[in-house]
Length: 229
Image (tube, helix red, strand yellow):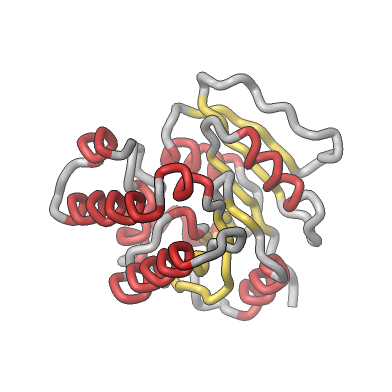
């Protein structure tokens, strides 16, 4: 069966260090994906490593993951759009497993991956992974740090991300899921633990649960953003 071409779209804001690490992982993939980095208009233009002779595009868009990811999708040429955060970590066999799944699962139009904190050890990271698993599989509420993907043919049907300062990922997932078939894959996608460690694991968990609860109760994203510090 023919392999599916993938465009990886990465919205960034003050993410220079994690972005460089992620790009180092992406450039050695086979088959190599098209990669689109979408900066904000206020940032210093990103300079790509010379090792990227092709397949890397750098765009600018208004600040906000939603508008940045939409800009990347408009420029993408792949059969599948894969939205990653700059601090995503590709696990062992991630790329091969994802490609194999794309070729065989024709009836599924998009989905997300299993949240993982591979570089963090101890009680709190494992508890956090369990809490995310419950939120995703019990409540069907994944976040964008798990990586979202969608086939090009379904993008217009699902619709773009909202231009919101927060919760644009969860809103998209719920809205797209009413129009196309989405699947939560068991393939793990790692994410950096830096923001949890900086803020504190317990404080991060309480804050995230509070923000989610307020959003589900109808509080506007603009108001929630003020609490998300």
